[in-house]
Image 1 (cartoon, helix red, strand yellow):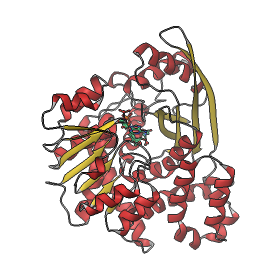
Image 2 (cartoon, rainbow, N blue to C red):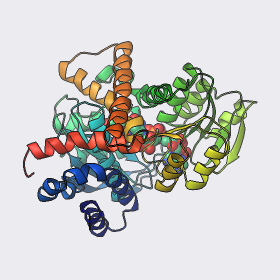
Image 3 (tube, rainbow, N blue to C red):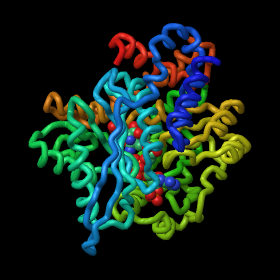
Length: 444
Ligand code: NDP
Ligand code: 2IT
């Protein structure tokens, strides 16, 4: 049996009931086959794949908090510190009722390669809780965040592990967590990113994932003879990534006609009104029905359906496994030329394969959404030098990083005879740097 197949079998046996983690490992290891085969003897002897698929450590803890009725609630908190061979652990905190250890491990594993692709010194980690922020008062959110950080603060620090936002965790939650960290540990340090601007946050971090997604998509299209201007775009999700992806797509001259949330989706043939979307989602924290009610050109539909709309470019920006094989078939049938993942692993393995076989340009999340964590690393740099850069300075660094990521993965794919396979390119380019660092640092 090949080394890759042996390790895949072992990962599935050792981590039962973690399908998302298996999926992420399968995608990475399968596309690394040519690299592994070229170095099989040494990687096998060093147990490199066994080590890279086993987190350095993982924490699971109780998070008790008191709701507005005086009732004690109990959630589970997680932090997985996956790999720190090229820098301190770095990755977001997801607050969503679907969170479990397998989901945090898939996200932490992806983060290793994504962070490596940014070219910045950050390792891979991820955390979160099965807490559901929906419908909670500010006081309840604060109570949860303080309790969560009371335990998490034992394991993190500016030079060890630096969490940030993800689904359900935005500036409000990061603020409450930062306050509690400071209170318990007594140090003022860049232990979290995505902070408010008055206490160490970076300009352009809020916009960074969505903007970065468009910078990479624009470059991918350009290098394949297309112009983003005038294209029709379908976006899923209506959170942080989706909002700023929509905004940048429209600034670049494309028209975004859909957004979605966990209960329904909107088709707005005149183009999404970003200011209205921000008012509904960022200020009122309301459902998309409110967007449709305020916008005569918009239709609201219950359930899922974004990928049934004819578009040139699809940007899944909500969550994992939201673009399925049938969706991929609908996109291809409608003439879609590019899919770029704003979310982490939104496209299933079968759907990805189908899109690639049908010559749709496909940019995987670990490259396409790396602008968020890259700008988090820029926030860490600003915190270390105790200075703040202008919006333009951060945004221009972000653009360079995204363009470089695209060329790195394009080159890596070409080096291994897989021209145009950006999934393989991203995995290979991300892996090479981490693998070299692990080998140089000995058995650890
Ligand atoms: P937000 O919480 O801001 O928004 C998430 C959006 O996705 C919401 O519209 C939400 O709907 C929808 N959504 C979440 N879960 C589900 C679900 N199970 N089914 C259907 N819809 C769902 O999160 P972000 O925008 O920050 O994150 C979106 C994706 O991007 C995630 O995969 C995240 O890991 C990834 N990502 C985020 C980065 C960041 O910097 N924030 C960086 C890189 C990747 P509703 O409003 O109903 O909850
Ligand atoms: O998935 C991701 O890259 C993020 N949620 C952002 C992580 C970060 O540390 O900014």
